[in-house]
Length: 315
Ligand SMILES: [Zn+2]
Picture 1 (cartoon, rainbow, N blue to C red):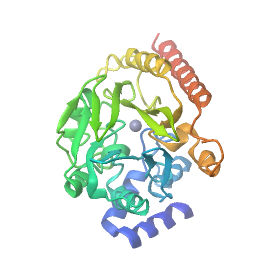
Picture 2: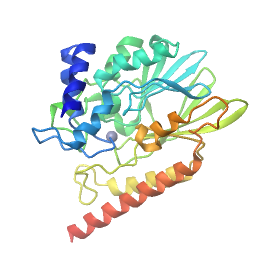
Picture 3: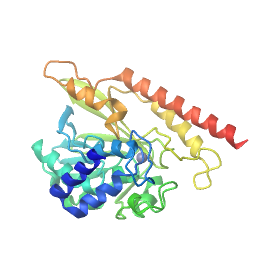
Picture 4: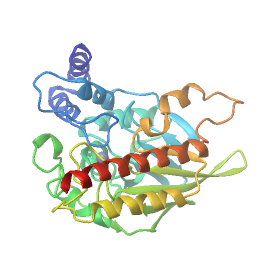
């Protein structure tokens, strides 16, 4: 309770009461965060407190080569710099935009150099700020085909989160519709969009090669492997292929080669622990192929447990 109130107070001071109200509403219910979303209770519960870190500023840092972390404590955003301008992955909440701008400035870059805007998937904690980022930068917004209707309706066509105002956001025009395997190229850097559906229909895992200290590293930024509370895997009329899509997603993730293990939330890859180990001369803690494999295997197991449970209950 106290933590939540102080966050709100901070935001009211730092960002203005309008943004704070949005942040408060958004922080109370969350898709894809580390904790389940339970927004109905008038008293803030543990899950809503867990989402308070979505709007908690976090010092930006270089992960490797031209790949930087510019997100908050709980919402991961990535800046990829090139001589021809920069790529931003995840615009996060509307309230996140000033935080993103601040992080990019602290690294010595300019948000106005962002030429391409990408997302992990079409949930408001990763894409609600996109309209504001586009306005600020004129960036070209590129989104996986199956997530485009959700992005362009401001969340209204999402199969799960379509009814509450705090789940919705400004509808945002997509400039380039991506398909599975498409490449996004800018200034000598290439990102590949892998369709990893289930969590959303167009959930996207991004991969890129990062040159770092003479080495070439494969970065994998996981879109989301989570089955959120309330997701219907069996008999889902609004998303009939959801279970098959999760299976496909785990197959794709299992086949990707990963050196740098990253994702849409820092909690996926143990960001806080790894940042603490980031020291000159020490091995790069984000190079974690084993951690990647373990995480994917654990999430695959969780998906199958939930599917078995729902299948048994449907009989
Ligand atoms: Zn999500």
